[in-house]
Image (cartoon, one colour):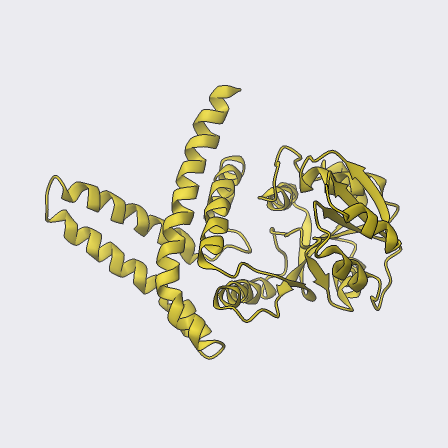
Length: 324
């Protein structure tokens, strides 16, 4: 099978060279590397051409549209996606395409790694690794992230590719995976297909990203209500944390009317803290600083992600639909 690797890039001059160098030194060489320049104003296209990549250009329309353009023009039977700020491991392509030996498999998902030493980056990586442990136990998955994704090109195009109405990196990759899962398509996790990545390094960036995830996850839940029950990637305890957050808000509001309800808010807060303990225990032997920081950071994360989810449900469910 021929393999096309597609990299969407917007003002990616600072990171693209490392990404392309990693792709050019694979144990299984790609049959082509396509860089889709999404309306960059820096040297992105110039650097891509200098590396020998095939360059496609479009006005700035977002990574979903950029990936679709690459897929439409790709020559490979398999199309692999990674991001311009990722550097794939030497056997990334080989690991990503190995599951396709099974004719049932139509997509695979790889993993993140990081070399960063900042606390927030290490915490983010351990969050991913706990999810990866869960996914590795599953025979099939329903969640494929575009930083390390592979599809049979024919199936990808038949499904309509990524939803290009997503204007920024958000949930377009998960939307496609949920769409394929609804059709009964077989997707598999490839845990040894990893890419280096730079995670957020400061708390405000981390929380802003979580709020954005909540906002776009609301749209996915409206489109795919069956996924409210859970998916291969999302920690099951997260739903409980959101429910406890809602109870804290309700009891706190009610306490202004009837003070004893404050005890309900306190009990809900203590229960929320208790939900953070399993991850902290798991993380402790791996990174003690992350384990100790996890509880307060989780409380902040649940608050902002829950707010993003609530605002997203209102906006996508009411405002956007009325506008239509």
